[in-house]
Image (cartoon, rainbow, N blue to C red; front, side, top):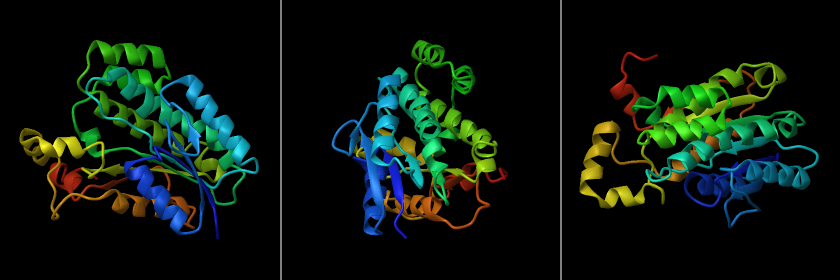
Length: 254
């Protein structure tokens, strides 16, 4: 049965692979990205987030069946934007589209988190994100940059765990889960593999038990399952798809 799915970060990487997989299965996909998709919007700004939600509502007035909050960046020179897009943009996507999800008889939502939650992060910024104070969170991250990516993903993961079991999400039958990809070969990570020192660091921070890193289409397979599953019981989970990194680095973590 065809479903209507919104995918942010749809123009490249995991988002593009997910769009391709969903369309191949016969679903209608509404893609969102800075450019080159169905809806062009900057999710790093309040105006862009509002424009995105408004456009989705116009394109699917009777509701949507799924959302992938996949838009994200990893740029050491863009600390403020990383928090704005990866956390506040993702949360706004999910919250602003929740009323449209509520119209579906099988609503599902997924956020792309990360194994970066295991790396050092800024607890002050995490707390500011969860408090919803975007201006203060961006200022604090800009004042002490360096852990912006892991900080944004940890904040998103904690928000998701809390939101998923709330009356508005799980209590309303809207299943919200996250995925925690490890190293994936995408345009965002490609430059890293051209730097021998970065390859060594990646091997230390993301050790894997399998041969080779994942392609985005492998991550899209898990997203497809979470967006289409029939069960009503899987919610509030962050599923690591990381070649075993989490089990290697945190063997006692359950």
